[in-house]
Image (cartoon, rainbow, N blue to C red; front, side, top):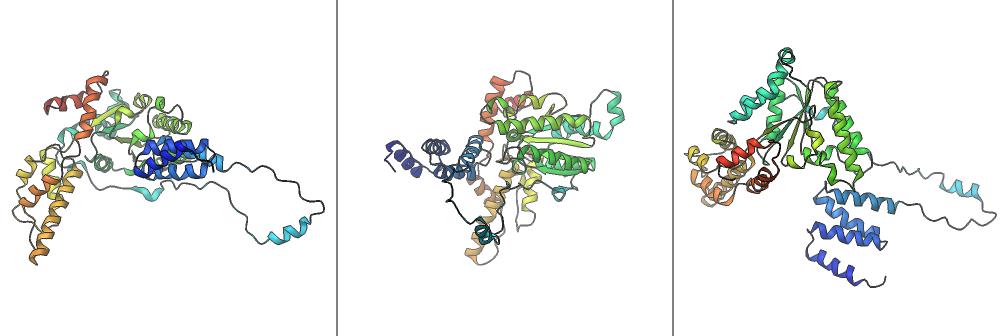
Length: 401
């Protein structure tokens, strides 16, 4: 193979920085141009192993697959007099190879659950519960009254906010309040590298929700499934997936009777604007880091089965503003590890104390900071329709705006 100084230099850079996704994709592109799809596939697969929803990598994988499965050039004609009957007899016992594309297993009825949790099980978050009751649960429980006031029961509700703040738990609680089934769907249940498969998966998911109505269909990471089509001009497969989602949402007023769609996202500003139109995700609810009562409930929950002594929950609550529920769970786990280490050193059980938890706070910082930094820019420069007024009020109150 002739020397290629540029490619050699870039491959060395990849070896030095294996986690650099743009660099890997650039190298894979060069390898495709140099008719080395097998080598390009290795770099593309590495990217998809860490970022399964990377649109550029998915599109590149489709190109590589097409290149590697092109039919070979026809070979020379067989010599005259070749014994075809004898050749067939020699391969008669070899089973035929299947070239059908592998089907990605879609969610099934086993993935649908009947939650026992209710909104009363959600600690604190009274404002979220009140908004849910007014905008979503109340009309669903009283369809005749809702109809009298011209309140449509179609459309979905979009939960947004920092990661780890309990959007999925709230979705389960909503299903519990309605006495409905709960169908939790993530991007891995939908997206597929084969053309048309993602759309079929989405259609199957909505069909399963209809069969199990009343059902709360919870679409997690909806920004990945319904991202802005303007950003997908070179990815027809993802554009088709968004179109399929729009089509399924438009059925909410008809054959989706009894199917209540909740979407959850950390990045609502990345969602295609068509999904925010009436009849689709036309209502948004901000789910913020847990307030003081919620933080107290979360801390007590994660400490309930651990040996403790004299825990000052109020002190911990005061020190954990802006911590997500996931952050608080991590604090408790880190503190428990400290107490376990002390117990092993002392050769006797040392209960977990407030000092252990305060020390853990020094190691675990709130993960919501980067999200609020992005949200602040959205509120300042892209809140033209007032859709993020609740977020703006929170940022002003906490002096983040």
